[in-house]
Length: 131
Image (tube, rainbow, N blue to C red):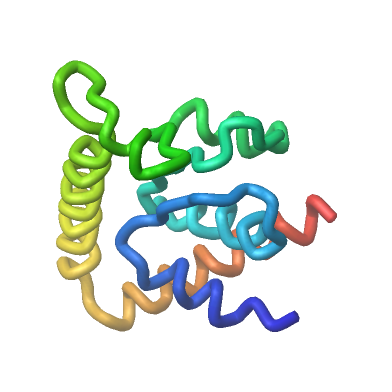
């Protein structure tokens, strides 16, 4: 399988919404996205889904929304529907990523590209060391 498009998507996206935790693509792309400091929101669409331990650990530090249907998305927690809370979270985290972009814009293109190459190389050295 060629996962290059998935890695490109993880690199250019502003925010990661995770609906499933059992796909091979997610198992490869989520650690990569986290290594790039991408904001992640988990939407638990299957309440009885058994999660891998490493995903449970990541979820413990991220936003998690319990929404298995449109009815559950409209349930109000503290007077605000889960769907509205999710919308606000997406807007705020997307704005946070834009703030990170300002830091990247403060340096030359060459320096930014060199830093990206170095970060990618460090990521792959760690991944290959774990195999």
